[in-house]
Amino acid sequence: MTNKAIISTEHAPAAIGTYSQAVKVDNTVYLSGQIPLDPISMTLVDSSIEAQVRQVFDNLTAVCSAAGGSLEKIVKLNIYLTDLDNFATVNTVMAEYFQPPYPARAAIGINQLPKGAAVEMDGILVL
Image 1: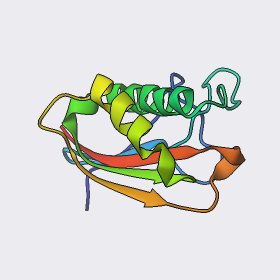
Image 2: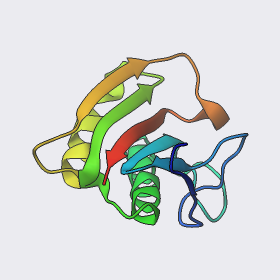
Image 3: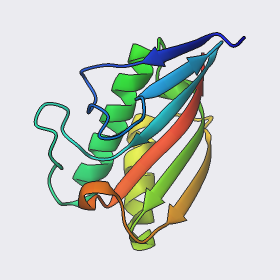
């Protein structure tokens, strides 16, 4: 039997489907994908890619905190972009939220994201 706990916080957007914001198993937390939704209004933030990336990191920060961790504890980060030309902006903003050593990471170009978002991120956190 695994030691499984559901992580939820009102400081990140509520799930818009059949999933949890995160699931903790022992000392590992699996973070669901976050898009740039404002957690209060549940609407997308400003259409600029920089604003969207910042909101995604803020949402991930809130879920990490609810799990008892922080962004620095993320060991794997997946980034989904509808336009890979925005990758440099993601790197610039990410450098404001993370310090070396950085997590392992993948950047994936995709056609479409929920609610018309330009970016989504998920990850794995180890406490």
